[in-house]
Image 1 (cartoon, rainbow, N blue to C red):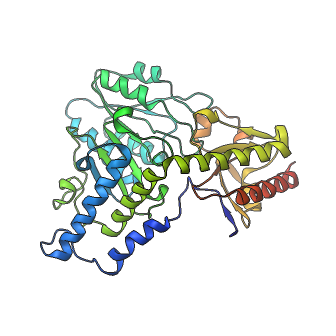
Image 2 (cartoon, helix red, strand yellow; image 1 turned 135 degrees about the vertical axis):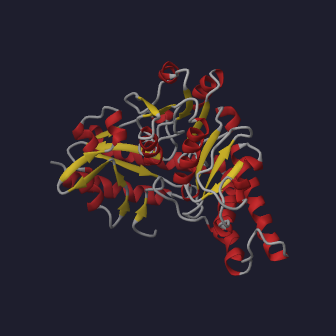
Image 3 (spheres, rainbow, N blue to C red; image 1 turned 120 degrees about the vertical axis):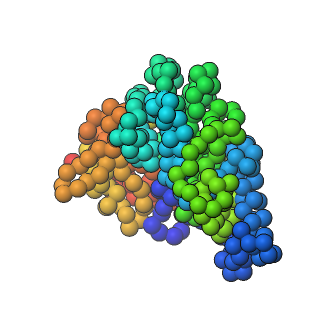
Amino acid sequence: MKKPIYLDYNATTPIDPEVATEMIPYIESFYGNPSSSYSVGRSNKEAIEKARAQVAGLINCQPEEIYFTSCATESNNLAIKGIAWANSKKERHIITSEIEHPAVTEVCKYLSSHGFEITYIPVDEYGRVDPKDVENAIRPDTILITIMHANNEVGTIQPIQEIGAIARQNNIVFHTDASQSVGKIETDVDKMGVDLLTIAGHKLYAPKGIGALYIRNGTRVENLMHGGGQEKGKRPGTENVIHTVGLGKACEVAMRDFKENQQNMKASRDRLLNGLVSQLGNQVHVNVNLENCLPNTLSVAFEKVSAHSLASFISGEVLISTGSACHSGETTISSVLQAMNIDFRTAAATVRISTGKHTIKEEIDFAVEVLVNAVKKLSI
């Protein structure tokens, strides 16, 4: 085994070997501008359209509904600001949740400073939005609902299909940030009832620096940038062919191996939890309902142990993340854990452990051993 063992796949994933292989010709040989009329340019244009179809296949939409961006943050900005500016002369109310990623919450804050009103829906103790709260928040001037598909910190899956039905009934545009869910759980845009959906390449075994936004045909989105006609003018600028090819291949692989990968991630996650509980018992506190959670994600607190001390102590052997930040000796709890009303001590003891599609039993067993020994040494 290669050490340290990487168990922070929700932060980012390594590039899949098949993805890297697919990208190499576009690094070494196919350098043409996709907008050029000669063959080396046309071949790159064809590669982009192939990738568009591969991404569309994974989420069950039409290829022309996929727009490539630089990352999920850009996709979220284009979706939320694009809908806001397209409707700004009429209505200015947006609904979101209290546990969104900063790539959504910061956009909402920005729009709030420009005259838009934002309603933040609370979540329950497991980080789940109640669709009734969304429905009750709708006003005559509501133009957009944006609720993430699955939370990046704790893994809770939101009732997107139910919220989508509510949005449809009220003729409101619905966006979901699916950065953490694509490739892990089903993300069929028609079943979900979404009009816009965000994809992050580096959460999907593609490179960093590439993302995509699904925009349902007929949905009016104002441009954030202006320039050439790339991406039908919606996202102008010379295309990132290399990374686009990588994202396309990553989506193809994710679709092909979906069941196998999902089962392996869940088996690894469950093996980890069972190993920890068997040796630490009640000292292990799971923050979410694992029946409604991403298959690879475990948000867990170890009683009487500082999450930062634990993560630092084991960093040479196992890599995980924490649910709080530590600056100048002061611990700040994440907004997600605060919204879930998790008490300070539990939140400060919370770590996120996330497995990958290639995580093996030997890595999990080693991680359990390392974590158990560290928790016992650090317990106060």
